[in-house]
Figure 1 (cartoon, rainbow, N blue to C red):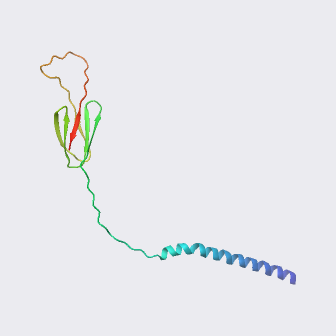
Figure 2: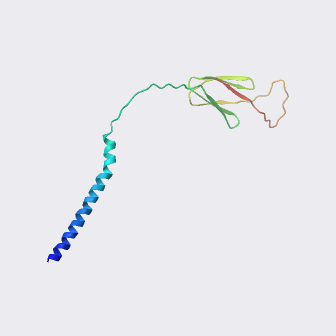
Figure 3: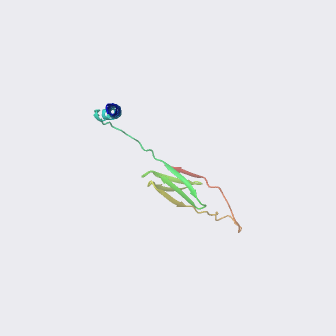
Length: 123
C-alpha cells in the first residue's frame, strides 16, 4: 500500500502543478487586456471648415435629351450652338429637351439629317 500511496501522491502533485501552470498562463493572457481597460483617455475638439465649389455635369440621354446635374442654387446657362437656356441647380438631374429646326428660308427635301451640337455649360 505504501507503493500505491506514493504513486497517487505523485499523480496528485503532477496534476496540481499542471493546474497551477494553466492558471498562471491564463492570468498572463488576461493581463494585457486588463491594462487596456485601465488606460486613461482624453478628448478634444477642433474647428473644421470646408468649401463646396459649384459644379455642373452634363450628359446626353438619347438623341433629344440633355441632362444637367448642378450643385444646389448654382445658376447655369446651357449654350447649344449659341442658343442659350438658363437654369438653377437643385443637386438632382434636370432634363432639357433638344429640338432641331431648319432655317425658314432654306429649301429642305424629305430625308434623314444629322448634325453635331456643341454644348457648353456656364456656371
